[in-house]
Image 1 (tube, helix red, strand yellow):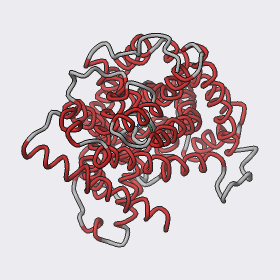
Image 2 (cartoon, rainbow, N blue to C red):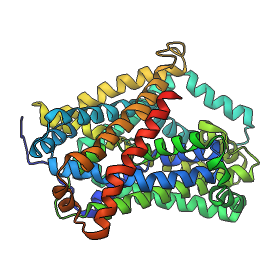
Image 3 (cartoon, helix red, strand yellow):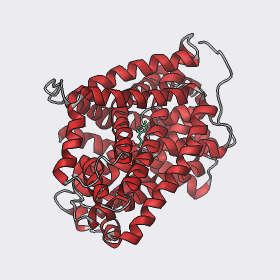
Image 4 (cartoon, rainbow, N blue to C red):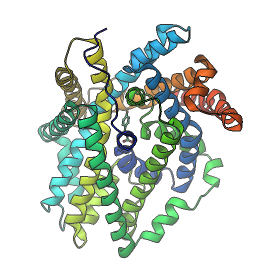
Length: 453
Ligand code: PFF
């Protein structure tokens, strides 16, 4: 194995937190979470999601960082080396491979949506939606999807920016970009929420998001709600794709994983909820449907922006925010592949970035053609875009996440784990109950339900 340079390290705790929050906070928080809340009936989903984050997401995040930090290598070699040092089979490397591959596959379609956000930022800035009615706005969205050329251009720009950032390295690229973009994202979010507080629909949005309707969690849709909440907990925390293993491999020993994980989970959740408060008041005050699905931010919001004072400005800021969120996640999605190529081949970081970018870009083009030229190319009944999404979020992420927590709970010697986490007494017992039983069983239940549904 080549060892071209010292393994990279985050330059500071804050830098690491920003990078990890950057990975976690993405389209999942600002695009997917609000529409999932909308589709799954509001606060019942929020409640299920919070439970999944606390009982399953949090321990798996800690487990992945711990494995990366012990291994100090790419996910494949980290799993392999840590397993070997515990006297266990090196075949655990497979989990790392699934992770690297998962991130690679996700980025291909994630970048396509990142491209939509870029495109919409420009469209709003140039007043495309001003005064348009709902049908016309929908026409703009469908027009974009129907045009392979447009989609390819924006996907290319998005991948290009991602590649440029990661080419600068772990500290000067990923860490620095996250340190700039995450605070700006938070600022933009609060500007939009501030606007909403003054312009109506706010109280309705708060009730919609926060007044728990427990009957939904015991009603007929409960299992769908809980399943999608868990799937989303994985996605939003960037678990099961080697990312957090990779980010952990750049961590020093003296950092408390539990307190870092607490910070990241809280920030990720707060940002998702605040994104809800940025979006739903606008939806409600314009009399639109909160359950509009994936079109919520690309159709419903532009309709609203098109009809409100300063809507073009507010809309541009909104899509700038979405773009920042997407970029700080895309740089994390490409990093496991790059760390792998750098460590496992003789390629330099720059060459690794170029190779990974081209491969992901190509797959992304195949994914974006699903919306137009290749819309009837179906594999197991899904177009390429949906196939990539389902394969990763329904199968690869849960399985790799499950493997990570089983590894931490059952495979690693519990003395090493206790040392890594610096736990004792009741807190240690609680960790063991969660890591050995609650989290793995939770994932298994969801996975089985996915298989039979
Ligand atoms: N966590 C990001 C989000 O919520 O949008 C998306 C993501 C990033 C998913 C990185 C997976 C990943 F590995």
